[in-house]
Length: 134
Image 1: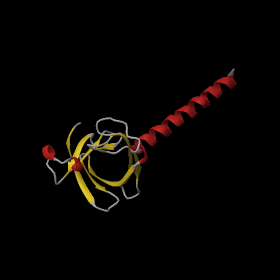
Image 2: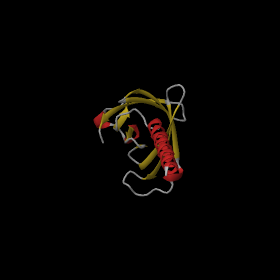
Image 3: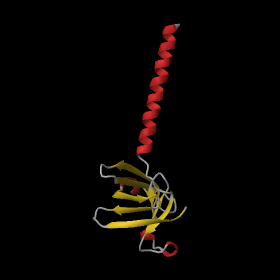
Image 4: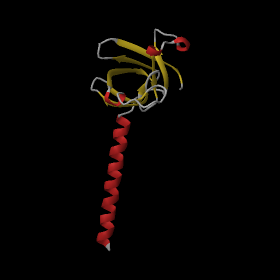
């Protein structure tokens, strides 16, 4: 009977350890940004063109022409983040088979909970600011 108790305790500890591991992985893959609509700093919040808008919902970055987006986030040694985003639908929610195969990459520099700078593959730095909750 004692042996069974020890095995149960070891199983409980192993389960707790795995839960903590998965929790720390999830925390490591989030961004310290307020959820909502971000626009390029050069645009007005209430009059921003679609190309200047990026929405962060805590799961992925999306835009006017994309939805169902998931971002894979890697924290880099210099304090920035590598963000890889795939979207499964168009902005209106229509499934987009091509979107699931397209991956957009950027490096994100966290400025504050409401500001970040994105650097896309072209090398252009684009500063964004939070405008509203979605």
